[in-house]
Image (tube, rainbow, N blue to C red; front, side, top):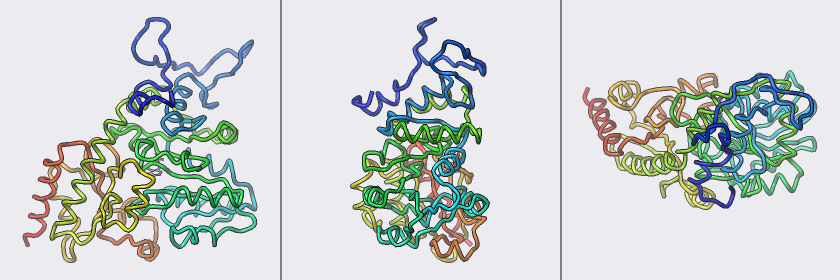
Length: 383
Ligand SMILES: *Cc1c(COP(=O)(O)O)cnc(C)c1O
């Protein structure tokens, strides 16, 4: 399927033929018990190898140009299992300074118990990564575009650095989705996803995924069957269904987000906009060189004195909500949600102010989104 076009892969890769009735979509196989005698594979849900788990893993692998893939019950199940699969007691890992809040919490709350050492970089230049590498470093972990500041990290440079030092490179590719960015093509070893976001895309699925070469996926499987973060066949089916329209959805998210970023950038109530598609973004050229589209996520800072709560409450269509990447536009304050567990000082060091708003652009008509924002700006300005 790799040579087929994006939307063909989205529609067909991995599908299970319905040999019984010839139906057009993959059947759901709910069995948790399969034969063990005279079989090549012993199937079991926690072995990540039921027919629907395999179909979904193959679909995501095809999208990411990877050899193999494995779906999980959540993005954090994929991330925690993968990190623990490659790190032993005494090992060290270099993390990009800005990573997803849940992944950050997992590291700072759990790694000490496993005797795993870690460092967060000071910035995202290659020198920032290289200077943190120690003799016991085993893994280098990045996230680009990052949450919530949409910082862009040079994927190929990190992959090359990892190769030079014999490290396993990992990326959280959730924000870009495989439609906009395929890090395996730049030499990254392992790609992680919260499928709760763009892959699912309708704000009704919690899932995760990892893709890589076969040998690495086997290593992750060995850890996965012990930790047990497997996904149900029904969720696999829903996700397979969602991914059929991933290419179409992300194209619309990209188009809308760019228009909204430009609208916000020229708005007098807005101080600053963070979006890699804007020419004013400090790493716009790097983003252009490694992304096919700039994604649906952006953040912005209101002018001093404007109340971010009042602004959100004045929105009629756009929902102030947790999570992101649904077909509907949503908005939130990272300082009160995804980054609430971080100290104010740590947030400030990352550049996340208490009034920074993160916007997840939906696929509604862009004029309607802008109208909703415009009315809310007007209401926030009055008294
Ligand atoms: C949501 C998210 C995760 C975690 O995924 P869950 O499905 O909530 O476990 C990881 N990384 C990024 C970038 C995310 O947005």
